[in-house]
Each structure stands twice: as C-alpha cells, then as structure tokens.
Image 1 (cartoon, rainbow over the protein chains, first blue to last red):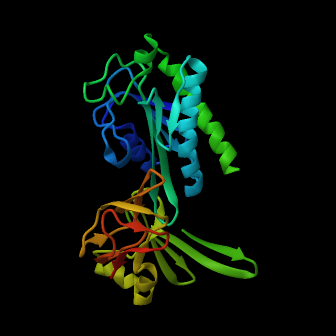
Image 2 (cartoon, rainbow over the protein chains, first blue to last red; image 1 turned 180 degrees about the vertical axis):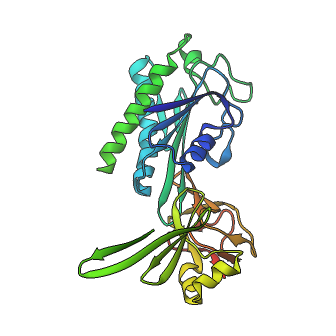
Image 3 (cartoon, rainbow over the protein chains, first blue to last red; image 1 turned 90 degrees about the vertical axis):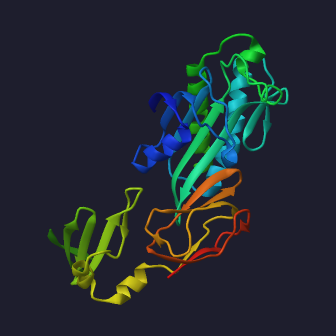
Amino acid sequence: MQIQKFKTLNSTNQKAKELARKGAEPWTIILTEEQSAGYGKEKVPWFSPKGGLYFSIILPKSTIEDLQTLTVLAAFIVAKVIKENFSLEPLIKLPNDVRLKEKKVAGILTENIIGKEVKVSIIGIGLNTNIDRLPRDLEDIATSLKIELGKKVDNKKLLKEIVLGIKEQLKTISQ
Amino acid sequence: MQTKIKIGSKLYRVEISELDENLLRVKVDGNDYFFSKNELGELVPVVPQGSEELRSLLREEVFLEALAEKEIKSPIAGTISTIEVKEGEALKPGQKVVTLIAMKMENEIISETVGIVEAVKIKEGQFVNAGDVLIVLK
C-alpha cells in the first residue's frame, strides 16, 4: 500500500478525491497530521488537531451496494481494532461513528463520484487518538483514546491494522 | 494512424487522429466519432465545441442528437443534499450536478453528457429513487 503523508490538509477526503481524479491507484492512503477543515456527513466539521489519526483510502471500483456495506464494516473494523489493542469497550453507532462511553471517538465518511456507474470511491476515517483535551463544546460528546487510557497510543500501528482490516473485508464482500 | 480491424468476417478501416490537444477523432469506415478526456481522465464521446471547422467534420446532426442525452437520472436512491447547476448552464462530461446522500455516504453525481440545463427537477432535501430524473437538458 502506498501512503502519501502530509503535515496538514484541509481534508484527507478532499485530497483523496483530487488524487483519485488524477488517476491515483486504489489503496493509496492519504494521511495527515492535522486537518484544517475536516468534516463528517453533510459537511459537519470534524475537530482534527495534531495527535489524532486522519486518513482516507482510495478504494478500488466497487458497486454502490458493496460500498454501503463497506461503510458499516469500516466502523466495525475500527471498533474491533480499538477493542483488541486496548481494554476499552467501543460501541458502533451505525453507520458512521464509533463511541466510547457514549462519546464519539471515530467517524467514517465514504464519498463516491458517480456517473452512470461508480467512478471514484474513497473512505475517510478520523480517529481521536493522541488528543490531550477537546474544546469545551465537544468534551461532553467526544473523547480520545489518550483521554480514556491516560497514555499515548501508536497511530502507525492502528493505521496499519485498520487499513488491512478494510482491505480484507472488501475482498470478502466483493467476491 | 490507420489500421484495419477484423471482427468475425467483417473488416473495418479505422483511422485515429488527434485534432486538438484534447480531441481525438476515430474514423470507422468513413464515419467520424470524437472523443475527449473528461475531468476523471476518461475518454468520453463528445461533440466538438467552438470550431465550425470541426463541427463541419461531423456533418450529421444525427450524431449530435445521439450523443447528447436529454436527461440526467439518479443512479441511486437517496436525499438531495446540494444542487450544483442552474437552468441555462452548459454542462460538460465529468461536471458535478448534485450531491446525494445515501446510506450516510456522500455521492457526487456527475454529468456524462454535454448539454444546456433546461430544467432542474429536484429540490434540496428531496428524496429520489434510482432512475428519477434530476436534470432535463436541451
């Protein structure tokens, strides 16, 4: 898998769409340290300071039905990776969010470009990992792994496990 | 470049030439077909714009009729989030026309044809089924 790393981006999904339009290969990962305009569904802002894990994956051409399934499975994979690595009990709020103690810890947004068929698909994931504290307006509705665990986590390891998990799942549903 | 292609027992004379930086002509047994790259880098059939000389190469308006579809339909069911085009606007292949939310996925619906927007048949917030007409072209 090819990873394109950035210090800062407006949004990894925007960058992924731009690169996909220019012909970037499927499974290219767009990774950034922070997003200045990260967003979730219907362009709701996603707080994305340094420390968090923000990335998008350019997906291979798939049917719209498979992509719908994949979005749900991506939330399951993120929750599974959190559960397997830490003594935490994540819950999925279908289809986009993963929560810890009723607070959002990860969000997933799949975006497609469709003509008569699907042309480009990307999946973006924001996981609050090493964020020390959240702004007051978010602290009751969101959390981070560092806040919950009281220690830093390995972003690189989590990225690898989530991407491999998604790759494996897409293989299963596409065949 | 000229070549002959045999499909089954039939032989086709094919000539491919670049008329412009982004305009390819494929002549098959004397009939011209034109292709251009859209924003996604895909070759799509087009009617050459802005050049009477090129237009005259086509001669037949029948070809133009065949290429320019009259409607853009929704490929999937979902809720219209934003409408990106207005009546009277010229559309080109690859251009975003609406954003549609389906199963919490955001979907940019793009035009695959050329034409002028005659009517926008949907409103933001409206639910559409797959196959519903979104935009009527002229």
